[in-house]
Image 1 (cartoon, rainbow, N blue to C red):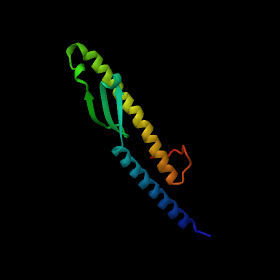
Image 2 (cartoon, one colour):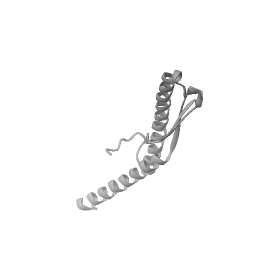
Image 3 (cartoon, one colour):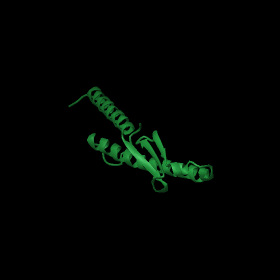
Image 4 (cartoon, helix red, strand yellow):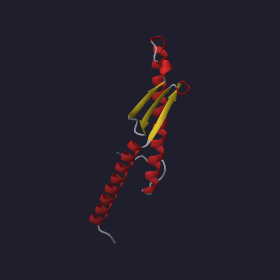
Length: 111
């Protein structure tokens, strides 16, 4: 039978392994890209799965003073689309990481 000290050491080692795997998953999220689109593709925003904006593409037809309000709305819509997609990808990747650790789906880690 294991001593209390051995069980504590095993628990600490397991916690360190989980922390390391979660850090690796977070790093991976920053390398995965999503694209938010608005206005039928007139505005596109590329972002990492962590939500970091990587790039913005705006169709030349929107670069007129009379289109300023529409452009602003489309940029916001494209950003929100990218954010939604980033959240979905992040959720999928974290679920994969948790399965790899043997944790049940939906288990909330205190990180």
